[in-house]
Image (cartoon, rainbow over all chains, first blue to last red):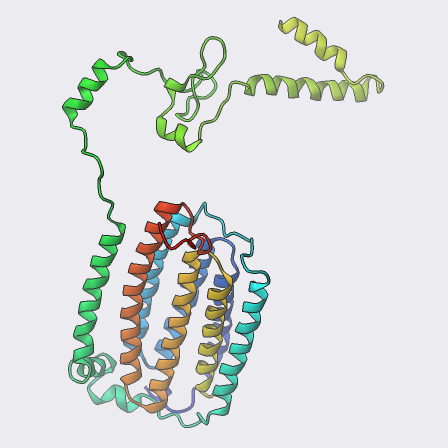
Length: 283
Length: 99
């Protein structure tokens, strides 16, 4: 409690300079990282450092709330949305307005200089410290509670209305109306029997090589069959076609062996006749 | 160390967040930069509370946290619904003012 007097102790100074650097690095990497996941993790680090600063400043309740609410809830919500939305969506580097990034960086620099110069010009040398305020009602949490429920009680209740509104808003925004009636189990079974494909669909994959669901089975003539893969994967374009893979691998093997033979035995030959012979054999 | 250094740090973090809002295109990263600015303001408010020796600054910071939580919930819901209709989280793509 005595550390909350006007001047900070040496330990707090060391803590400030060490963790302040961490906070600034985290903030910079939030802005500069290409992937949104990395930005979110950097921002979580910065927020934890800020929680330590709140604790050092005597705001014990806010320090804990910062960790629980910000890094625990809000940043995890960010990570959920990043997983839902943005992992594949790369940030476009194309500039819509020409030179906007450099202009924005210059504006930010000027803004920061103005802000910091303003703080430097203000006479902020008298710090009262929170020692008396924290002990007036028995502690930091009790002091905050007595203020919230007396002086700021109206704002506190408005806050409740705000939270309810935000919850309802999020539900309304993310709710998707069903445009067509869901098919019942009876309709599904009837459709299955009356369709053209009565037996079970053929299995995906090529036996003895790949049997993953994203690999279409091959018909006797070597062409992939559309019946064997899910429609969702086909619509997404996530199907791997392996019908040429064995031929390609054979070709690469022949080329490698041809190069090696050409290099070791006869530098003049490149292995072309060998491959032609082998192709004839394969035919 | 004078505790006014916390104010310098808050100003620096706010500036970084503001520059990030101007520079980045991904809507989620924009939201993160806004959160960074709000956090910087909270640090300044807590430091002011220490400066004046009363708890009002911490109350304001507490309300800022509540409002930030509500803002994040609604903002991320908007991002998700825009992404559903456009398949993009870039703010440059949402320039037609219709879905």
